[in-house]
Amino acid sequence: MKRVIPDEASMEQLGARLATVCVAPAVIYLQGDLGAGKTTLVRGYLKSLTYPGPVRSPTYTLVEPYDTPVAGRVYHLDLYRLTDPEELEFLGIRDIQAEQGVMLVEWPEQGSGWLPAADLVVSIAHRADGRDVALAANSEHGAQMLSEFTKLASG
Picture 1 (cartoon, rainbow, N blue to C red):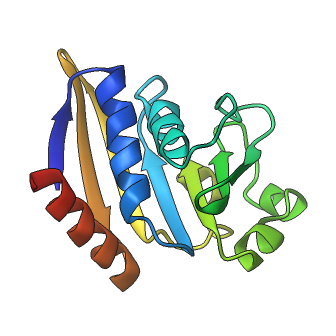
Picture 2 (picture 1 turned 90 degrees about the vertical axis):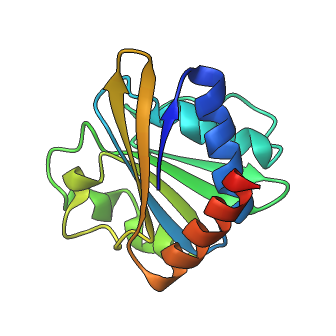
């Protein structure tokens, strides 16, 4: 599924719609260059789950857990600064996986071999008038979420 996202508010709305169809456990990879809007999408995702606090990119902490009143714990990972995928072991990736929650992962290629496979991949690319966003299922669970997302987006 592909769409054009014209602005920041629309990217947050996309994240909010994604949250409505996401069923834990789920792993969602967020791919795109710096400034593409990955964290903005996560902010919309968490706001829709009534998370009350600020949502920042975990560029320096690498992992940020969010306890949401609606959907429980959501992990936001930003692996841009990861120098070796094995560092995920020290960040507690096994414990995060064991929780069976939702993982939203920016720069997933940095954790290759240590991250669980994605259920859904969201690719974001810059364009002159906004962003091109493509969603692709990578598992049966991802296909179910994408099907629900498509129904929601078209209805």
